[in-house]
Image 1 (cartoon, helix red, strand yellow):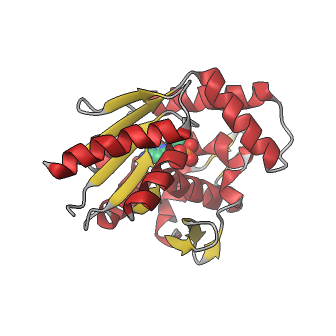
Image 2 (cartoon, helix red, strand yellow):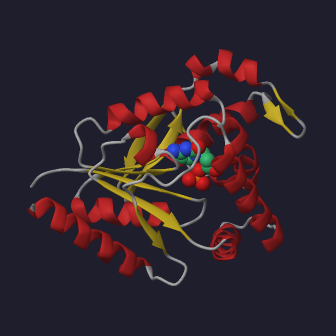
Length: 229
Ligand code: DC
């Protein structure tokens, strides 16, 4: 069967990764979470004190980018690939509020984007890939056969994220999560390099009231129509 590239973009916490993971599993495709790559660079910057409360030593981060080696390794038990930084599994460390608060400024740096986009394009060379992020349909794979743009209200997204963080044992208020979600949306959509915008040929899905199953099924229908052509 013909393999295609599926690009899923959208605002933070729209459930892109949940949908992308399920699609990849059903289609036997590779799933790549590009947000995890920007989070990995942010984790590296935090560990090395290049960024923190009230400071961002952009030049130092840029100078040290060659030391940032991001890889993915499939975890059979979890059913998806976990992210590694220089050989260390950092899958859990990148999902904290601390990383979430600093990732958008890190993702504005063109040097960071250039490095990660190059790696992402290599990963998709053989097709048969589902990649989610902010600029997949516009910059990474402008020729992707299927582009999805996911949206949902900020409140719906903050609520989902809040529940997720609580389940992971992180103590914080709903208001803090909502603030993080809206701030990231703003920075991600207004940055100069590869801002978050819907590609002209992307299909928009507002999933505020949709179940995961319904979303996956409607995307699978689109793919089936496409592959049959
Ligand atoms: O998908 P996520 O919330 O884990 O992404 C974290 C941040 O990384 C997001 O706020 C913006 C940035 N990002 C990006 O700029 N481009 C991508 N392709 C993916 C994520």
